[in-house]
Amino acid sequence: MTQTVSELEFTQNLSEHRKTAQERAAILANPGFGDYFTDHTAIVDYRTDTEGNGTWSNARIEPYGPISLDPAAAVLHYGQEIFEGLKAYKHADGSVWTFRPEANAARLNRSAERLALPQLPEQVFLDAIRGIVAADREWIPSRDGESLYLRPFMIATEAFLGVRPAREVSFRVIASPAGNYFGGELKPVSIWISHNYARAGRGGTGAAKCGGNYAASLAAQMEAEAHGCKQVLFLDPFNDDAVEELGGMNVFFVFKDGRLVTPALTGTILEGVTRMSVIALAKDRGLDVQERKITLTEWRDGIASGEITEVFACGTAAVITPIGLLKDETESIGSADAKAGDVAMGIREQLLGIQTGVLEDTHGWLTRLA
Ligand SMILES: *Cc1c(COP(=O)(O)O)cnc(C)c1O
Image 1 (cartoon, helix red, strand yellow):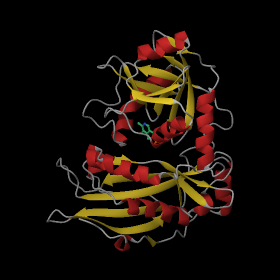
Image 2 (image 1 turned 180 degrees about the vertical axis):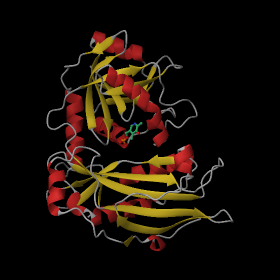
Image 3 (image 1 turned 60 degrees about the horizontal axis):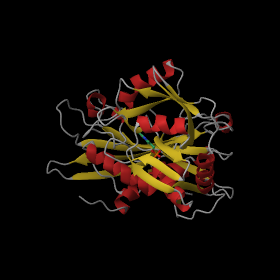
Image 4 (image 1 turned 90 degrees about the horizontal axis):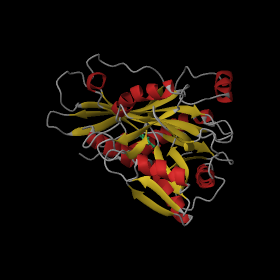
C-alpha cells in the first residue's frame, strides 16, 4: 500500500523536560560516542489491517524517553529488528548537513526485506531525521571531527509468541552527540582474528544491518579484548579464510602498485556507505579499485613481501581507521605501532572535508537538514 507524504507530516510534541543549557554544555564538552542522547525522538507506527494492508501513520516528534512495550513484543523474543547509522554535521555557516542519507534509507529497506519488516518510504526516513534535527539543533557539536550521530531503527512491537512477521512495527530515530572518535591523533588499531566464531553465513543476515548480527559478534569481541585487541576480523572459514569484515566496519588493502582491494559483496558482508564512498574517492584518485576475494594468506604474504602497504577499516562512526596489527593465538601480522598510511589518511581527510563542508562536495553526497 502506498502512503502519501502529506499524510505522514511529523507532528511536534516538544519536551517540557529538556536538559538545561548547562547540562547540555557539560555533555557537549566531552560527548564521547553513544553515551548521551538528545531531548527528542522521531516515531512512526506501522500496522497491518485484517486485509493484510500495511500503513505507516502517526508520525511524530516526541520527548526522548523509555519505550513502553508489551513483554510479549516480538522484538524481545525473536529479534526482529534493524537499524541504521548516519551523522549530521554543522558547517561553519551554521547550516546542518548529512551524508548520503538516501543510501541509508535504501539499505534500511534492504535490511527490512531480509528481516520481514515493512518497507519505509525514503521521504519518511528523511523527514524523521529532519524532524529530530530541527527539534534538537542545539545538540549538534561543531568542533573538529564532531557530529550528531543519528540512529534510525525499526522494531517489531506486536505482542504475540507465534513465529511470523509482526503486524505492528515501530520506526524510530534517536540522536547522540558524537565526539572526535580518536581525539586528534589517528592511531592504528590491533585486530583479533576470530577463528572460533563467524559473523554471518551463506543465506544468513550478514548483508542486513540487524541487531542479531551484533549480538552474535559480542563473544568474539570479548575474545579480542581478552587478547588486547580493539576489534575482531571475521573470515569465511569455508572459503579459504576469505576476509569478510570487522564487527562493524569494512576492510581495505592498499597495494604498492596502486591497487586498492576490498572484499566483494557476497551476501555475508554489510555494504557500508563509507565503503561505497571510499571506492568512489579512490577511483577519482586513479587507484585501481578491485572488489574481489582476498584471503588471510594473501594478507599475510602481502605484508611480509611489502606488496601490501596499508590496511584500513571504514565505517560511519570512525570514518577510516588504520589497522596496525592482526593477530591470533599463533601469529602476528603487521605491527601495533605501524604509522597510518598516506592513502588511508588522504581519503579520510577528503571524506571528512566533504562531510564537514570544508572541501567541495564533487559527488553531490550532502543533503541539507537545517
Ligand atoms: C554499519 C556497518 C558497517 C559500516 O557501514 P557504514 O554505512 O559505512 O557506516 C560495516 N559493517 C557492518 C557489519 C555494519 O553494521
